[in-house]
Length: 375
Image (cartoon, rainbow, N blue to C red; front, side, top):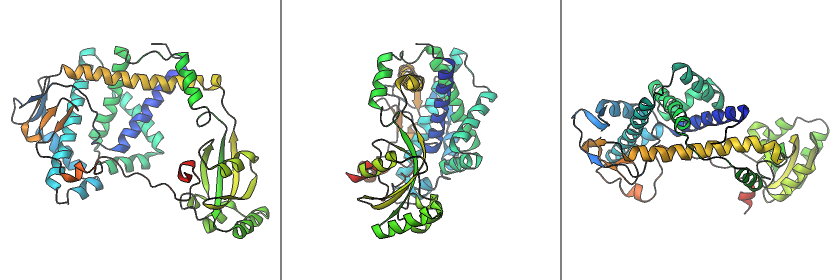
């Protein structure tokens, strides 16, 4: 694999840390699917939920983590339903699947002489806290996911070990110039084009919009007027702030007004299908050239190929692993690499019910002037 520049390697390390934050937000019940693993049922010890390479995973560990998972409001709510027994079996099988994968990775790391030091875990934790916006947000994410401190450390340890294993086994292919250039062209406008920071006030009528514009021209406070008048629930409480706007992200009339305005300028009323907008551009960033973007793209592609390579290596590793599962929890499914409960998951699951481990999707603002909404 091509040796990345020092700054690029640092960015790759930070990108891997961001992946940790995402995993924490999803929940402790997330399962990494490993295909084509050997199916072996029945464990040697009645106290074991599973045995991996001769190492037992105690039933008590699964039960303890299930109790911790109940702290997740979504899990607790599902357990009150008519199909609570089926749901409990599903959750426990997901927990056991995660523990089996962790044991496979741990044994692999032992063979390679790889360890995760406490200093490395602390460093990863600090990075996650930074990515989530602070200690309070971190603790909130942990509580919502139903994670114990032990589970947080396990998640961090798994990522440290996987990153080290990937480096040891050379997971991932070389990133070529053609790949970098192709990625740049595909994302030239959305990722590397001109960007603007903007805020807006959305109202139904032109006369109302014009009145607000005049108040702003006379020195009115934009944030206060947005909170008092805007009909966009997604931005009004933030003073109308829309964050960063890129090409193709918003409807044409809105985009034209944003990128046609000077930094600090207030423009409008601008009419779209949502109503009339008064817009202020609070900042602008010029488009990035290929050379300016090259290191960032190379880092991102390297991370992607490294993760893909690691997953392939894990599949190969798991294919030869001796996995025995206690029938109480189901069977080890070679097609998905997960523990499948003996009981069917029920009609709700077959009908495409929501994943109990996934957080609810944030509903997009009906008034947000996005290109997608306009179609």
